[in-house]
Amino acid sequence: MMTPMDFLLLVRGPLFVVAVAIFMLGFGIRLVEILMLGRARNFAEPRGSAMLGGFRTVYRRFSPDPGTFERAPFDVVIGILWHVGFIVALFLFIPHVELIRKTFGIAWPALPNPMIDAIAVITLLALFAALVQRLRDPVKRFLSTPQDYLVWALTFLPLLTGYLAYHRMINPYPLILGLHILSVEIFLIVAPFTKLTHMVTAFVARWYNGATFGRKGVQS
Amino acid sequence: MTLGETLERNGISRRGFLKFCVTTASLMALPPTAATAIAEALASARRPSVIWLSFQECTGCTESLTRSFAPTLENLILETISLDYHHTLQAAAGEAAELAREQAMHANQGEYLVVIDGSLPGPGSNPGYSTIAGISNLQMLEETVAGAAAVVAVGTCAAFGGLPVADPNPTGAVPVSKVVRDKPVINVSGCPPLPMVITGVLAHYLTFGKLPELDEYGRPLAFFGQSIHDRCYRRPFYDKGRFAETFDDEGAKKGWCLYRLGCKGPMAYNACATMKWNGGTSWPIESGHPCLGCSEPDFWDAGGFYKALSVPTGNIGGTAAVAGLAGVAAGAVGGYLSGRAKKDARTAHRKVTADELEQKL
Ligand code: SF4
Ligand code: SF4
Image (cartoon, rainbow over all chains, first blue to last red; front, side, top):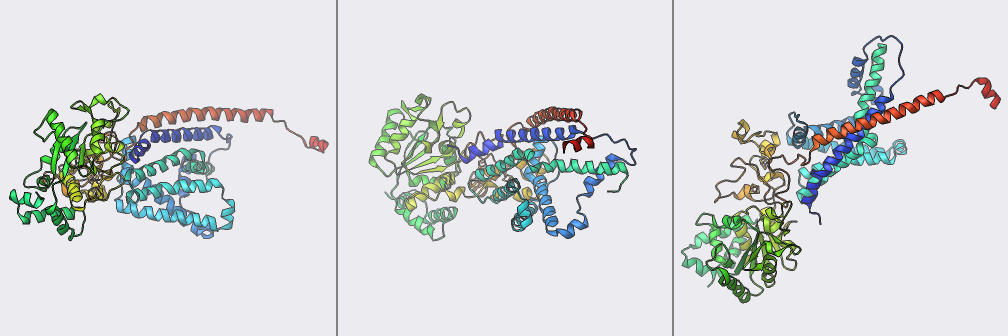
């Protein structure tokens, strides 16, 4: 029978390698395929820098335009809240930084744990509010596919299990730590094949938009 | 002879004895009133028979128990039990020793405690890997435990398999709990366990006649209820993100957290941080070394001792690079194919004139 420690060793060892491999493989395929599709050649004379325009738009689109905010303040605020919270918890929590340091050899300062703890709570609440809103708003509910709920759960679970592990709310500890790692692995495996790809493609698409504007000399 | 009489004869004062009882009570998170109960129970207790079996072990657990400093609670508790059989400590050898074990078993049928250190070759493996007086460990365990009241597995080897179980486990070792099914087994893990934890468990049993409350791993909650990390005095540094990077850098000198040096404190449950070692002198993290998580299952196989707990044990970097490249290659093939399909579609595309459409209508 598998003990919680066996489980932890499995998810920390071979399973993690498998998950990362699938993640890299999947994203490699998707991205390169998209990029290789190419675009029709533009014969018009460029009026500005495509490169610069691209990056400007990647940056600019982080702040919502006023129209969107007025129409859907809830979505904008909650959306920003949990995206930022998720990224901060992912990249600025000490054990995560340590993982990145040992794996890729790069590191940066982390935030104090109590701060990450608070951010995790806010993120969890925001994600939960987003789900409630999705279920209550008739238009959103109509537009939602099963994948939307799946992706929501896959985003929610790593945060929830991470929170439970940090506070040792489920025993034995190797079990909840293992579940946390497992939830991340599922996220990694599923990401390249669902709308979670936007974590990479959103930047590509924005850059492309901006590059077009840049070439035409349009302020984005 | 009762324990009270034994103590008196050995010149241990009533005051010293009560102090022991109070400490034991507080260690086990019992209310202060329990100290009196412990004192009464222990004073009038007849020395219960304890048979200590040593299987595949390194004697570290016995060392831990006996290397405590006098006058200690550990010595005191050794007075309270009748250690009728213990390889390392007994004077008798060979057949005489085995006879002592059998006598103790017969004289105390159903009442004696069996303490075991070390794991043993399991039922499926070659019994010849570990024998005592020609008797296999498994056979000795089964016949000794048959008449016991309870079994205490002392040390990580007895509790979880420890070193003998480490991959590739050449002797097919198993922990005691895998073999003993019909008697209560209490796991006092640690490599070695704290002496006070061993004696505390025995004192609890002597006082209340039953085993203390256990966690998921069969360990007494009183001693294994909190993680090393939660009780570590370096914890404020962990929370602030101040780490020693090497064993002799500035951080190490300032007493910063040892997480990056591989500390397994966050997943280790033991009483080191509160009880300390060597008569309360210090403990591993205080002496500047990360906790190895010695009290946990799979202790020897649970990733590198000096790798941070959150670091995956496999080779991620290399695999990620290879998988990424493979993905790029596969994507390139996919891109090429769809590009070609696009081109084919374009060449195969036949322009339709308005006239032709009209005709079709
Ligand atoms: S030294 Fe180990 S147990 Fe202590 S705070 Fe750091 S990680 Fe936790
Ligand atoms: S500090 Fe950790 S490794 Fe060291 S004895 Fe205590 S539990 Fe075992």
